[in-house]
Length: 261
Image (cartoon, rainbow, N blue to C red; front, side):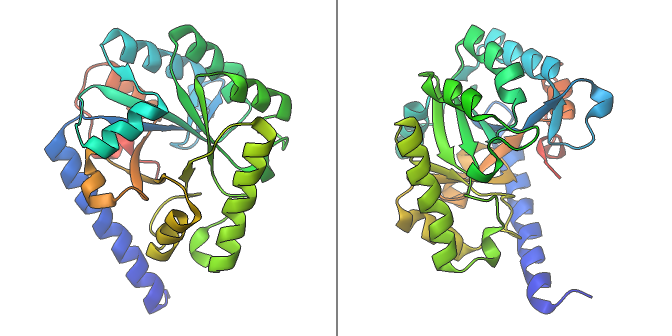
């Protein structure tokens, strides 16, 4: 039986997603989106979760977006859109979480060919682990002008369970490591797991105090919902096989097509 506190947190998460679903329907599928991608599998049969997709589907999606007149935003364009609240239709911002090595081997050639800016939300503890990005590949990605680096937590921990001191360490140490290793400013953050169940209001306030300019959740929604989410829990759209199939066929995107769970 769940304790009362956890029940309240889960109910908060449910109500929050109800609001995001309503805003998704209100703003429409051509609103600016932040796309969230993880790793790739060789075949669709091997894609066991909504966080997995094939490299072929990723390439098809990227090509479709460009062919249909969508604009791939760079980081400075993203910041400007947030600050001015001048929402441009058919704009997208591409982000990768955790960073599997297939981001380098499968996605990177596509991004170079189509000249698509991208952000890597890196977790230091995952680098050089089996199936995750190797340090040589991460350095090659980071050196490309298309690439922006962001923090994803030193050890990919659920932040809600951490003390303020430990959360600060998880963020500051990784930020310092990224900036010193790759000689790039790191200004943005993505919460590991990224739901309200794993992220508290105190966590979001702490991210702001640490000095990040914005932070991303893993809750689905159009970017125009920033007035509701704030700059430190920005919504993203999870890219899955289902999302790619419907989007590239010109079908109306349902909110559940963008969910990661």
